[in-house]
Length: 328
Image (cartoon, rainbow, N blue to C red; front, side, top):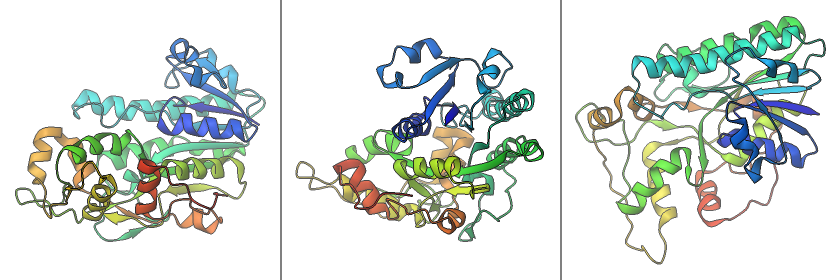
């Protein structure tokens, strides 16, 4: 099938595009940096369309005849401090892109069978130790409001007969990118330690939950959303086994231990939350709070996680140890 992807040059987008091409699908990627991407050999298997998904343009004609749309557009949450202007970019890049894509579907005479909207587990807000599933209500902080608005912008698709899936992604683990891209250099240079959830001024003990997912599994879950007609509505894109931040940090530290650095060890406490907020600003709340999310719908649909356990996921990322099973 023809699959139209926004945000296709990002971490999830390019891995998803490659996987879908290998499965026999034809991929169109919408980008404001089309000319740059066309010069990248890694993007040659895809057709790159020039345009901004948050603004109307000729790109909307390319949706004609596409069986699926995957919307991954959105300004990087961690690109800068959350000033008023940065918050506006984060919100508008997501909500306006969703609105423009829905408008493009409405004007198309050959509508897609499925629309997959990328979202995040930030939708749920902070809930302490409470287990969250797709049926849990939204939170009330900034990230929750952004996720809720972007998801709501795609609701009109349901009246058009288009299957709508919303993938709420957790912390994606991939070598040198995302969370690990920021954490690995620190953990290589200094002892591992919890990050956040230690109270405003007290040392961090890392008791907040981290709902993570290996890059291969989040790609598998997006592929499930595209190809499985039974997938519908919200779908949590997380491993079935979230961990506390302290356990994540300890496991990462142990995984990075090697013959060159056998001395590597783990400290039981980390910097206070106030220090993180001083360094990062309001975005620090995305680090110092967390959610315990369960991918109930994915499991119900029979998805077999390649990396359900954190230790195996990190070993594969840093040491190349592959699983015996494949996702379905």
